[in-house]
Image (cartoon, rainbow, N blue to C red; front, top):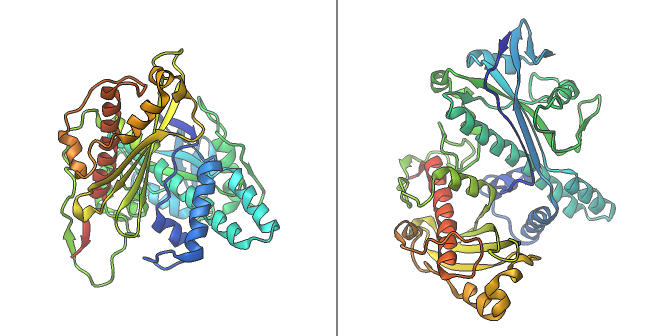
Length: 419
């Protein structure tokens, strides 16, 4: 019996969801490289927008206290599971532990899909149903990336996840895996999940998984089938060991090293850990058909007076294509819909029209390439409000540095392209 001295347990509700358009298109059943148009594009945009407003995604992961392979069984915290493929993977990698993970898109999309079906709107039903599946895939990917981050810093590596219902793992073992998941320590399971005897979960847009954990990272270099990166679409990950195998690459085309459009050894004004967290939790990147990007950053702060009223602003940035060095074409900053905290800022109370017009007019690097943020000499006031120019410049700098970091990490992950 192998016991683990240092363990991880993480949980979260309403994490930022950024389903890649190509992943959604794939799950809808279209061929690789297909571009949605007309009614399909309208439905896809509607499903994404509905979920952004109403969805309640969540995730949970914890390292098992005890792990052992005994005969044909995998013993996790004293509970036995039988999966030949998972067992072989754990043996090959000489795994010393496993991490139990659960993610869910929430019950809301499932219930809305059912209502659309009952209202005889099968198209809306289908697109929202599939988007829920895309959210589950995204959450699984991002959770795996978080675990890779944690493991890498401790000289370990995380193996590809495996779930009941996958080949050589009977889905009927899912209720027992859920029972094991619910033996949480500090964090409670963020959602009420039930399992039927058949193995079906409720809500159905939920996934339970096991990630192997190994200290023998050298083995992953020799056994490429054990590297989770090939099935991981998380662009900003800095620990990628191999390219994502679903990345488009037409048959017969040669591969060349991609010339970086951004400075990948950038010196930022804040540490990379903060930028990574902001990129994951606050940033939404939307790749458009012409190669440009629409980017939204959510800023949460407080007023400096009136007992620190919370406020939320959205920063919208339009970037040109990568081939042009991501030129900044548009910049906008405004309070989030429904935000009232900004009305308590002292400058707003004094002259609301003037302050809001000033905020909207400030577009500090429009027309410049994104790399320009690295040399921009700007104000350094870290006040949470928007009253002073230096504070507003400071916030724009953080927003653009976060965008730069996220795209630079994505370039590192996608380090090859057709010649």
